[in-house]
Length: 316
Image (tube, rainbow, N blue to C red; front, side, top):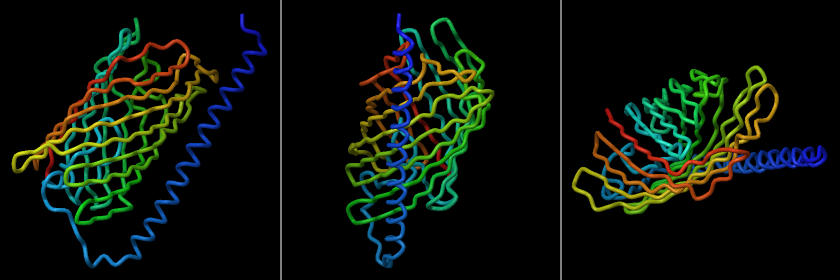
């Protein structure tokens, strides 16, 4: 039997670890914001009367919205002014005793060439955790993305963005398994993309801060992602590409009635190879995520793999 002293010590170490993670992430993001403003100020002071662009081949053969982007990661959704994209994203988390299927129909609109707004209405046809099953609407969210830094040369294009969204608790935390947070949440993150004719690379980092309701609070989530890919020789009017990305997520423990659920939270890292195919009006991307690291707190069943599919139709 574990002594009260040992339990208190473990609890204190856990709190210290959580606080350290918050401090490290906050420090990183403050540095990121400082870099954003520094770069933005530098760009505003440059003479952009002479603009170079890469040739319209390879990854640049189609408009911005049809060029390769992350599958499992977030952001990278800045499109041209006035353009509309209709999306359907689906994933299937598969484990021996767990199964989660998400379907996310969404609408993306280009407010300007630097601003986009993204409306998402996710739902789940199947949630399973051992004997427990549920389904239904998940939390609706609206996302804004701003490309504060754009640089074009004859060889590549760089873009850095800030991403934020807010969720509405249309899902249910009372279902088992829950289909929502039970309270609003707020997301803040940043991305950086570099696109070349043949190669492209990206990285993104962000955090989901959840609010509490009736002393119940889903743990905050911290995301860290990066990836790269290469163009595949394609017919005229199409872009084919392969991609490989690493996606990590650290979840803090949930609290119910003011008490920590020690069978929640943890850290997971997935490796996701995927294939991309797009024309001027249509795009499709499919990939399989494989866990390379899962450190789940307490007694939780792990996922074995994740199937991901993303489709979109573009209207100019």
